[in-house]
Length: 157
Image 1 (cartoon, rainbow, N blue to C red):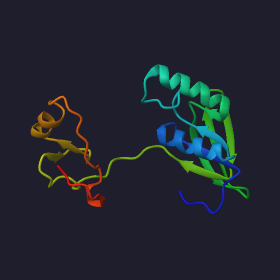
Image 2: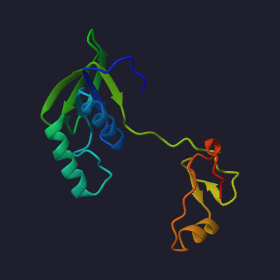
Image 3: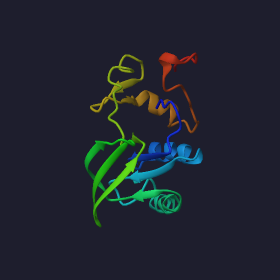
Image 4: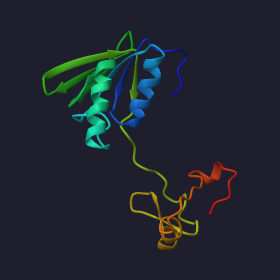
């Protein structure tokens, strides 16, 4: 994300950990943050107790719109406007900038398919073979190696 200056307000579309991290950073720097998320909680893939407490804490700090579907996004003189459909009816939120943090599909097809001990999956991610699982996870030891071996100076296993 490259911005020439700190925005006064930001709409964050998404409710996962990237949305949470970025909103925390911008909110700490003084940006007014509004969350728009489809789910009933933020961090929906986390433990139920954690996501409930996290959502409660972020509701106290930010404007959080849950269960929302974006009907339309429009550019305005001051930034951007999102028209929403929510459980309580139609709503609109505005911000100087829009951060879309809705997740992504992995695009790692072929990155590790030639490395010994790994095989590509149907979703494009890389899964360790039986030999790697037995060596690393089955040994009772924690083993760490770089996730981006092409840019790392660490030797790959």
